[in-house]
Length: 119
Image (cartoon, rainbow, N blue to C red; front, side, top):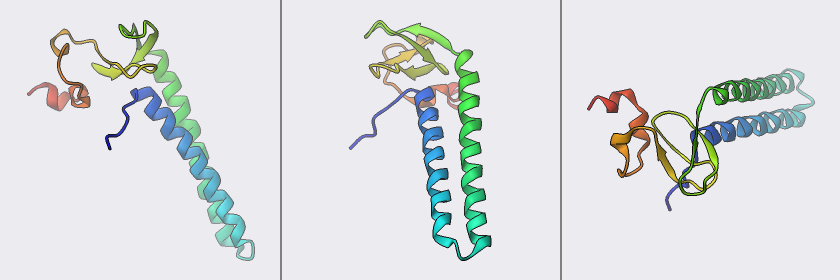
């Protein structure tokens, strides 16, 4: 089964949300070690660092999101944000591109890579 594609901004937000829940789970795991104060403290600190990391990622993608190019999707006519040369509409998963030479080609994330653009 193929993985459902999503826009890059939504992928990063999903990563930040999963990091937040992973932090909560790690901290909750520390409760099971109440008798061992060092281990419990270690779990709590690692979980707290994961939550702080999630906050940093959310802040970073928020700042990055303010600088992105906004385009109108030709399929659903909604305004969506693009990162890079190619991206997917946040609403209808339509492949979008800013490069006229890529129009009509199969969608591939590799078009955003500088290494593959030279070839």
